[in-house]
Length: 120
Length: 258
Image (cartoon, rainbow over all chains, first blue to last red; front, side, top):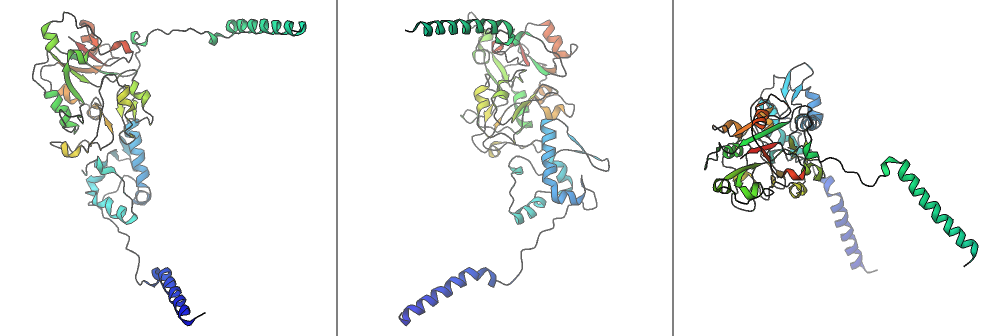
């Protein structure tokens, strides 16, 4: 093997490993997880904050099903308070869709609620 | 042919015939002709059944306040006069609204008049049977034929099934064509079918439908068809009324006094 070819192979290998390991060379941290704040943070949500953070989509899905298909439009919170099953109920405390978008953007989730629903 | 074989075929044939005869006598479900009474001529009175009586004698020419009120409340886009038109309640000539009725020797007034058309909220809705996703369904508790826009996939089977043309498809994004958006009611998006919902959102708050509330002439009357003391039943009792295309057996909940 000629020396020229060896250099070429070595250069090729170097480039290959550089490309493969490039991601690990980066310094820095992952993007910060946004923590959106409700406009009325002193109030309690329709369920516990923990449940809402993890399972708000399940609650909204239940609301949609029971309100649209079964006609049960009132949600009773664990402490007995009653809420209308409506996205606008959410925005009374949470302001606007900005609240939703912060995390959804981070998680690359794009629900299509606002193609039809309004932010109030 | 062998004598034995001939005898065998003859006996088997007789056996099969006897079997069929016995089966049709013993098994009652095997009767081949069974005709149920036409569902259009029966009454069923269970629970609430919202309905409407339209007194066309009271409706003024050129007044479209009911239509405007409905379309404003429900964010119905205005693509008027195009193939993309969306309508929940509208007015059409006699021959379009009552295509099954005779047009012979009609009075000039009847012939030239315009009549309201809207979803009939049929008791036997063909659109519900056609919908593959159950996006449109009949509410068991009050008879309204409702739509769950979340589920609609835009196949338009319901539009083909509806004999009244009560359903419209969103060919374009409706939002830019809505003059004044009512924030209390959602809009629809491109690719779903929509129609009159008998103002179920207003009924839930104890209000009458928007068109009925808007009509100052009392031409539109709304109430429970299953309640014998309701205003609609009183009108039905005292007037000759028509349902659109009653011959189809869909049992519409909208009645007309001509």
